Each structure stands twice: as structure tokens, then as C-alpha cells.
Image (cartoon, rainbow over all chains, first blue to last red; front, top):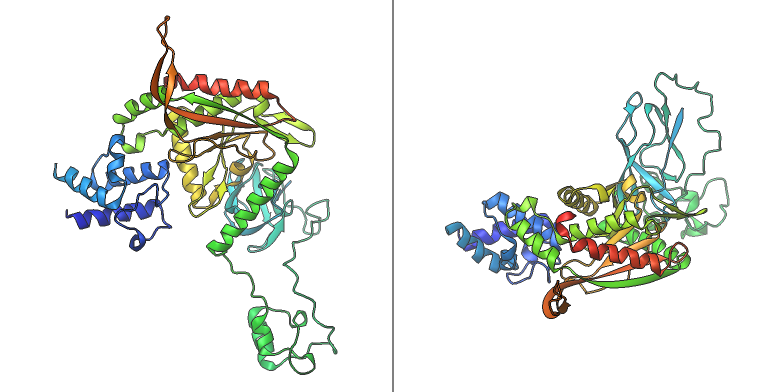
Length: 82
Length: 390
């Protein structure tokens, strides 16, 4: 999966968790909590959705590495390749 | 025979609009069954029934706005025959239906029917408007097409999101104004070392799949529910006869809605739920609150409310009690702070970085004093020092 495809997958799951967000309006460096106002329950739901879709289990200690779409694409591509 | 009525879903509710029946005449109903969906300021609410029996008749039309207490359906006991058609359904006269906001009175018509252009008459019929209620701007006060076009449109079936938000804001305003007017609040705060709780939870979650992980907030909810069970002056409702402590803890959870607004549905008997079940109940409640699809009992059964600022918010908040409850626990965001930790067995005190959280209890001085509020906070603190027991 390419970086771009991974980012799309991340954004799709993100907007399912927060349906009021529009994919086109989310910047690569928008912080999912500080900018997009996800709370800890939303983040947990996002992590569970990514686990179900990609088979990648993101431990709590790594939540900071999916804090923005750009960071998440990097991290998830790396995890998938590992 | 029983009459199923429009329920009151909070002190601020006057009327609700029936949008869906989930039962039909002849259906058996049991206590707790969802029988109808009612649209209120707090969204579409699934209304439960608290009787057993068989639906005799549905007495309210879909789409009508009914005041609290208005009869909606007749419930027959098992084996009971339906009443004869001429028998009154209820002994009391039915409450007046809620009228739509009146349209400003028109000048008295000169003849039996108002003067109006044919095009105006046609459009008025299409839109379901009463011509005699409109003011005419044409010759001799005749109603023109433009007058009809400018008249208030019938309300759309579903409120637009902006309207829903405005309605929810009104509901919050009504409840909070009542609270500030009637409840003599006092507040006590305690900052609690939650390092042990976060360490225990991190270790637990490290081996759990994402769907089985538990949030720190769930630990706080459990501790609050257990404390409410112990300090009865914080758990119950204040009514016309004063304070009635509740026999169980139905924990209201303040849920912030994305885009604004707040609603505090309750988790029944939260103090008895093991952590994984409490976490699942919170997830379910938050999802349904955000979809504006809660049940009537969840809106009215809360006996104490917890409002948490989450992991990224401010460090403390003093909340407003949600009437008719008598206490609200506000939880600040965890902060890493230098903390003095006393070692056991005479070991010297040390300064350590620890995660701390400030809990602020708002209580009703008609019911309790600082002593009980203090006991509640001390209880929460003690419970969080033994997270494995929660």
C-alpha cells in the first residue's frame, strides 16, 4: 500500500468516527485531537477501526504516531511492511 | 386498562412530536419495551413503556406535537376486552394540543371569505395555509400571490442540524437556568494522584485488542458510581417533598456532541458493572447520544452526573448540577505534576513526577454539607489508589 492509499484509508476511518468532518477539509498536519477535536473515545474507536481494516494493532504508546494524517500514513505503511 | 402518555423527558420538556410507532394494536408490550419515537429538543428519543399488556389502540397521530401527559395509546391487561367505543379513554379532559406559534392576526375580513387572487388561493391550498390568517397587501387588502409566498412555511418534517443545535441550546439553557435559580450550589475540589491507576491501566491495555481497551475515564466513572453508592446525600432526586435518595446509582455521563451541545444520559446501576461492561456501556451511550438516538429512561433516570474534560482539556472545572439531581462531579484533564510521595514504613518523602487529576464536586446545600462532599471525594481518591479492585 502506498503512502497516499494509506492516508486515504486513514481519512476514511477518521471521518466514519467523526462524520461531521469532510475528507477534503482535513489537512495533512491537522492534529486529530487538538485540531479535529476527537476525544479519547473517538481515538479508541479510530484505532479499533484501523485494526479491523488493516490488521494493524496500534498500542496505546503509539497513539502519538497517528496524531495527524501525515504521521499516520508513515507509521501505518511502516507497520504493514514490517 | 392503562393509558400510555407523552412522557416528560426532563424538567424542561413541555411537548414532544410523535414521529414513529414501533407497536400496533394487538401487540404484547412489556415493561421497558420501546414503543414509540418522539422528537424533542434533545433529538429523537426512543420512548419506553412501563406497563405490561396488549396495545388496545393507538390514539395519537404521527406527526402531531403533544404536551407532556397527553394520552398516546391504550394498553389493555392480558385478556381484557377493549372498551366500548363511546367510553371515554381517560377520566380527565385531554390536555389541549400545543398550538403552532400564532401568525399575526389579519385585519378583519370585509366579507365572509378574505379577498384573494386565484393564484394566491391555489398556492395557499398547496401549502396548507389558512388565507384568513394572512394579511393582504393587494387592493383593498386582498391577498396576493406574494403575500402567500411570504407567509410562514409549514415546519419541515426533520429539523435542519442548525435548528437541532438551537433547540438543544434552549434545552441546556432551561435546565441550567433552573439549576442556578433553585439549587444552592457549593463546590469542593481534591487533586488526586492517579499514577497508580494509569500505570495499572496501561499494563492492562498493553495486552488487549483495541476493542477490549478501557479508558481512564471508565475508571473514574466506576469510582464515582461507587462513591455515590456510599454517600447517599449525593445520589438521588430533589422534588416537591425534598430530597429522596435513590436506591441505586444511575450514573449520568455528560457527553459533548461534536459541533456543540451536551447531553447527560444515564448508565443504570453503574456501580454494579465490572469495568469492561461499564466501558461498553459508555461506548454505546456516546455513540447513541451523538446519533441523537437515546431512550427515554436514559434521560430521566440519572441520580448523579459526571462530566469529564477528557485527556486534553483544562485541569479543573466546577459544574452545574443537572436538576432534579443533587450533585455533579467534574473531572479535569490529567496533568503530570511534581508530587510529594510519602514512602511506606517510615521511608522519607520524595518529590516525584506523577499524573494527577482534580475532581470537583458540586453539591446541593439543601441536601448536604461540606462534610458529606468531603467524604465523597475522599472515597473517590481511595478507590483510585486500588484500581485493580474497581
